[in-house]
Image (cartoon, rainbow, N blue to C red; front, side, top):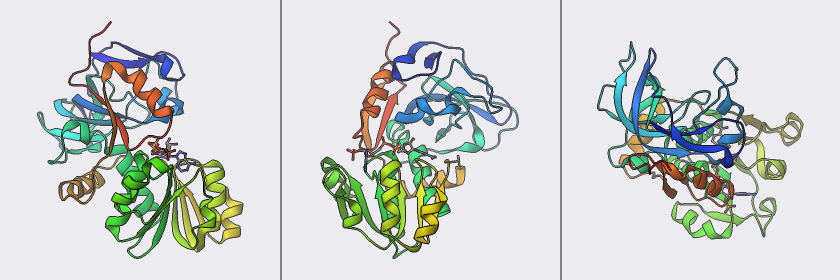
Length: 315
Ligand SMILES: NC(=O)c1ccc[n+]([C@@H]2O[C@H](COP(=O)([O-])OP(=O)(O)OC[C@H]3O[C@@H](n4cnc5c(N)ncnc54)[C@H](OP(=O)(O)O)[C@@H]3O)[C@@H](O)[C@H]2O)c1
């Protein structure tokens, strides 16, 4: 099969478009014919990208954790999906990903593809939507009528978080550069702050939840906008305990987990028109290096997706 692989740790310069062995589905796994793969710009820096589940080095490695495709074959003991099912899912981190013509995925991590989406749009959903879902509803316990501040609201995670928070009935404020403000207002964000011209802590106060997709100085200044008893949930870095204690708030960091049940619920919301994926760019598999470079250059709006059913020829 054709695949994007890295033979050494590094950045987009290490990505090679080449022939790779076809994966074999193990017990509990499905082999998918990949139609589209979503990328996460930062994934080339994650240790899991180069590690097996037991922590041993895993090279060469295939990136891409979002997949939309069709079930081609099953390993033993699979009951969740059947051959020819159109599915989408989050490929677990310490294993080869979806930037390839085929990928083996734990069947329990797959769900039926949203009926209203094609493969390219479906591949923009799993990792970002699951991260947003788990941040808001599992970790922060966001409820109707509460206020949330979302940092990086135009990004892959942020755009789903803004929509899910609105669906839940929360009031949403957000930070983003000016080019995204109109887009975020269309998603239902009330106050959008240009982080490059305005210090958000001078505008926002007493929110119940902060979702931090940025970290660093953005996280440090976020304690000031939380009400006492509020929650800062970060997907960028673990919050240190001292400022949380001083602010009388909870600080949480987590790593997203695959969930078939949550993907089913997310598909239901998409098919009902309540939330939608946002595509920053679609490129053929052969141009994965350009896709990662684009993502790492910043200012992404939504997700970057690789089209794999028309992957481009090997040079
Ligand atoms: N823990 C987990 O399980 C998990 C899961 C998914 C992602 N992540 C991490 O979460 C982070 C975000 O991921 P993503 O896929 O959403 O990234 P992304 O798609 O690259 O989006 C980042 C967004 O943040 C905006 N931004 C940059 N600097 C900002 C600042 N100082 N304040 C406010 N907005 C700013 C960018 O555009 P503008 O600058 O134009 O506004 C962009 O829209 C990454 O570090 C990723 O590794 C973690």
